[in-house]
Length: 277
Image 1 (tube, rainbow, N blue to C red):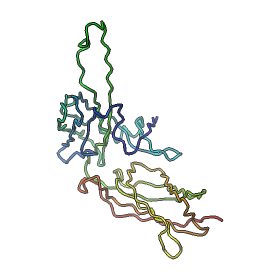
Image 2 (cartoon, one colour; image 1 turned 45 degrees about the horizontal axis):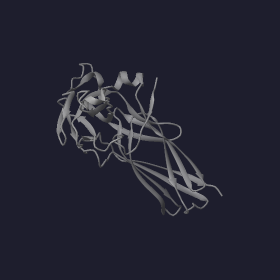
Image 3 (cartoon, one colour; image 1 turned 90 degrees about the horizontal axis):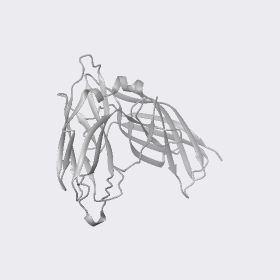
Image 4 (cartoon, rainbow, N blue to C red; image 1 turned 60 degrees about the vertical axis):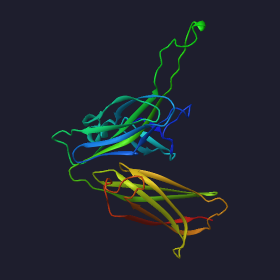
C-alpha cells in the first residue's frame, strides 16, 4: 500500500511565526563507510526550541497530474530498501537556545546479510517552542491558556552497502502542445542498485539543430516510472513542424558533494515530436 503526501517545493517548513525557526544542514545525510554520518540543527529564532529526531522510510514520486508527492507507506520496497531499522540518532531529543546549534550524529549498523545497494530513509526533525509552566500569567485571570505549534522538517539519509551503481534508460517520450504550453512526459527505467540523483537538461531543437527551448532541473529518480515536463511558451508560440527533444541526464547536483553521489556516465536520449497545425 502507498500513501501519497504532497510536497511543497522550495519550502523547508511552514510556520505561523517567523520567530520560531529551525534550520538543517546539509540538505541530505550521507552515511560513510564506517556507518557514521551527521547533520547540524540550528535555532535561528528568538526563543528556545525543543527538538526531536526520528526516521521514516519514504521517497519522492509523481502523480498522474504531474504533482510531486512523497510515498511513505510502500511496504514492499520498505522491506528491501529501508534504513529505518539500522540507523540511530545521538542525541534524538534536545533543547536549542536562540542562536544555538546541535550536531546530531547518526550510526548505521547493517545486518550481516545486507545486500549490495543503497539503503535510505527520511530524517524527521520536529520542533516546537520550549514549554513554559502553565499558570505563570496574571493570577487575576484565574486560568492560563497555552497553545504551542509543532513544526516538522524532513531530509533524506543514504547508506551505501557494498558495490553500488546507478543509471537511467528512457523508454518512451510523449508530447502534447496546447495553447501556450508544451507538455512532455518521459517513461524511464532506473538501472543499477542505487537511486539516480542528478540533473536533467531538456532541449527542444529545430531541424537545423537550433535550440528553441532549454531547461535544467535537478532530479531524484528512485524507481522505474514517468515524469512530466511543462514549458510555458507565452507569446512565443511554436510553429507547426517536426522538432527533436534531447534529454541529458548527469549525476551532478550543486547541492550535493560529488564524492557522495553514486556516479554514472551521462545519458542522452533523443526523439522527434510533431507540433500540429
